[in-house]
Image 1: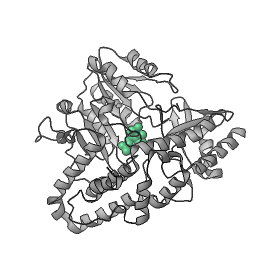
Image 2: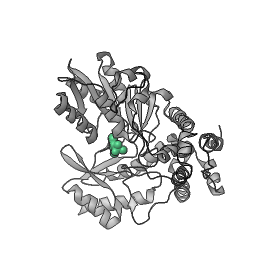
Image 3: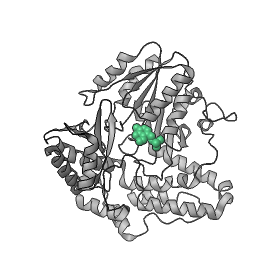
Image 4: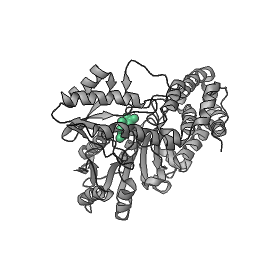
Amino acid sequence: MDRRNLLKQVGITALGLPFAYSNLFANNQSNDLVEEFSDEKFNDEAFWKKFKKEFYDVSDNFINLENGYFGVQSIPVRNAYFEHIKTINQYSSQYLRGNYPKDFERIMELLAQFSKVDKGELLITRNATESMNIIIQGLGLKKGDEVILNKQDYFSMIETFEMLEKQVGIRIKVIRIPLLPESDEEIVKRYEEAVTPKTKCILTTHMIHLTGQIMPIKKIVDRFREQDINVVVDAAHSFAQIEFGLKDLGADFVGVNLHKWFGNPLGAGLLYVKRDRIKDLRPLFGDSGKNVNDIRKLGHFGTLSVPIILTITEAMAFNEMVTTSLKEKRLRYLQNYWTKQAENIDRVRVTTPTGSDRSCAIASFAIDGLNTAEVVEGLYKKQNVFTVIRHLEDQDIARVTPTLYNNTRELDILLEGITELAES
Ligand SMILES: Cc1ncc(COP(=O)(O)O)c(C=O)c1O
């Protein structure tokens, strides 16, 4: 299908909203650019310059290479969000009690298509942390049950398990995975070594937030399926950054973010539970009315931010225009552009596996003999490049996360800064 038609189908004519929100691609120039998107553009700097000008309104006061926290909304998404806020206040409860449930169902259908699962296996949440808490606290872990965590999993999920350790007496085993693995099997083996007959749950992170390493989730899930171990997957960073359907992970429980690489306004996440496992999760929020097999039993949240939810339509349309395939290629190209050069600078250690199936946008580094806090500060003060320090097991690293509005010229400035610091 022609991209523009797809956009019309997904974003512009799909919802029966009671108002006409601004056309996503109202100006002609944008429409011309829509025609240009193709996977071959991944290294075409002139194309990405036009793309930034057309679709992003970001400060030029600094070079933002810390796009791992959340994904800045593109201009059409931001405009649509404003528009939804306005119209929600114009139409008030008449809309919420009227057309909203129908529009909401349509959004769920779009999300199901995008994530390649059934609508009844998805729940919109406020963020990945909420999705993961619904899973972890819903599993009904008991005293003496063992869970395996990776030291590099996200701290909020680790804290949820630590809370259960105190509250119900589960036992936590923490493993370390290799920073630069030679094979998937090397990673799976670390989990194998920690599993015992008491292991009930493994937490895994699809893309590790510290280094950007992509974990072999399907292999981990497949390895422990026979042993009835619940593998719960935190896919906060991989969703809409790299191309996969949620079912490709093979896991029964996955939590993701919509406000990172999907580019929705802040405050949206997604929970996936395989249909026949919904009954195995106990609701975290009080619910007595829904069927045990209905995923909505897990989402008795009360009133949510409707404008954020409605904007999923435009964020989806923007994703459909760019395509995850091109996004993944571009982001990996940008990451490889700087890491491949940084690896050759004396004293610089890249702490991310840079092979194409092992990382994408996010990567990190350290400079031997230098304090990483000073590296991050030095890059900001001297080059105006914003990165972030992360604490990785027994060392500090600087995390660098370019996004679609960044370019190779900015990465050259980063490399200049790293070289200066390494030579100091
Ligand atoms: C791997 C990972 N999981 C979960 C989260 C939590 O996301 P949120 O704070 O939006 O819930 C993050 C946030 O950076 C993350 O990197």
